Amino acid sequence: MITRLDLRHFKCFETLKLPVCPLTLLAGANASGKSSVMQALVLLHQTMREHEWSSRLMLNGATIRLGAAADVIDQVYGRRNCGVALFDGAAAWFEWEFEGERDEMSMAVRNSRGETEAGSGWNVDGSQPLHYLLPAPSNGYSLTNRLRRLTYLTAERLGPREYYLYDDPQLTPVVGPRGEYTVSVLHSGRDNRVLSGFTRTTSQATTHGSLTRRTRRNATSATN
Image (cartoon, rainbow, N blue to C red; front, side):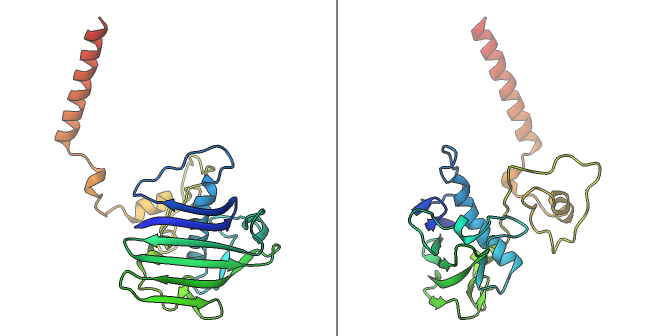
């Protein structure tokens, strides 16, 4: 799993080194950078998913639209460059440096470097063929598979509908930024087993209900 996210000259951050846990909550005032942290991951996801062989970071697509390079590069410390790095597991790490003119709607990969857990590393510039923003072929990197399947939900989501369209599972592996593919994902995975950690047996539910009722009775007795 991703254990740390680093940003350099990205949005409001001059430098950020953020530890990541299985459950990570971001809290803070408005315009403090919470959304920017997520957007860095979403830009990687969007580029890998929609432009498999691209050597540019796509700032605008079906998942997210951030405008031009000037809207992504830190306005105080950045000029034409910004960087994103991901630390994956105990030893693997991936780092990208992107550059572009401030009015461009995408950014070129200036450099891609990193190292796998097995110890094999790379350091290539954007003139070399890239597959999912990594040296081709990159199908062996589990990080690319996880980033392509990343689920990003915006604050603006689709409300209840009288009917829902069913889309090809190959086109809708995730629920979509507005939840527009939720029904398709649920339908295509209807026969898959639910992970045991997300289920509760009948005996567990009964025990939980008994404890809840007992707690309420005790609270009522204490109040009386």
